[in-house]
Image 1 (cartoon, rainbow, N blue to C red):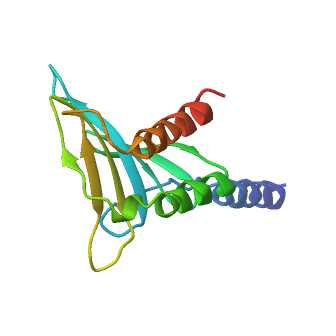
Image 2: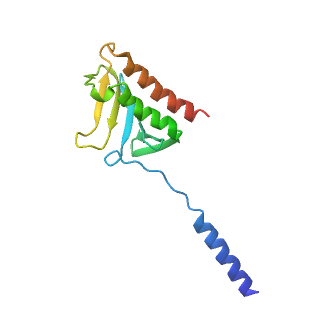
Image 3: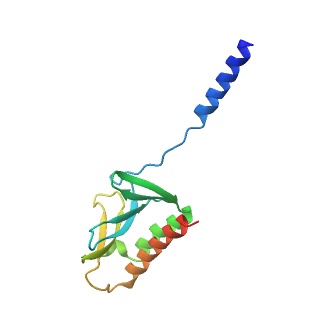
Length: 145
């Protein structure tokens, strides 16, 4: 009888150990990403989201980064490809206003992240605003399911 209890305890223990969860983490200092968000206004609060090439989406929080969702791989691939296709990687835009918007791309190369910031006046290049809306909608579509 004691032998059966011992076997049962071992089986339950091994089962519990094999059911560990994997916490998704993010570190912008060592990972490729496209980040976007907005800030300023009366509170000065900034909302910032990060999309990794594998589709994992994180939001910056007071104490780190919170995992939100995962985009389909082909959607993430398209987002990263469009950044280059729209020549956003060749733009220089640093024109924040009281309320501002931004897109940042970190390719993990020797140049560091590239950031486009606007809000003080209307954009001349509407592709930037359209791309920004696609990023926002991608997250909304994925988190409202």
